[in-house]
Image 1 (cartoon, one colour):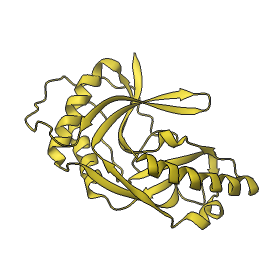
Image 2: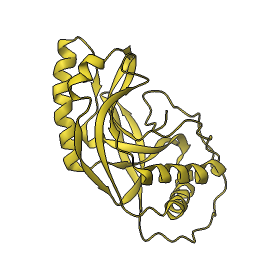
Image 3: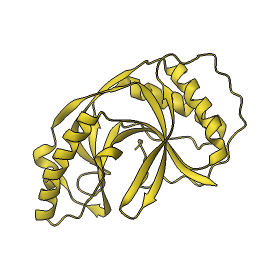
Length: 218
């Protein structure tokens, strides 16, 4: 059996509430401008550090080992980051994903790099794009201009998130969008740096890096 997985960190509840409030205002602007956008639930707000795609469930143990090695390698400890600015992929003129940006957070980037180094030997395809930390807040079915929808909030700054753990999520498709379920949690401090590679390479499904994926890279 395969499951659709990604590794990331959730935003703080207070930040999720702030983002949700902004999204309510954005939704009203989008409706008045006849722009159809699908808004994510506040409980789904997170920063993706590595999208894994369809993966055999029995490979989760190997992924956990890789996560623990990555945390030890990055040596970041608990992280703090702040959401700020709104934007869109691939651009506000042809948006398929609307996001809240994350301030320059070297700890997140270091974790993403360490995860890449540990996961590629397990059989996951190498990521060739630059890491761009962000929180997806909405998606569009086809490329659409959203710059005027975002304009009043494009420079908005939100509260800070303190991150103590790295999470592995399963993404489950529901009629009203994706639901993210926590599979396991790896603390960002107190990890045994002597964890050794014990598992064989995993068998992965086809990588889905579509705009609708939980993809933190661009």
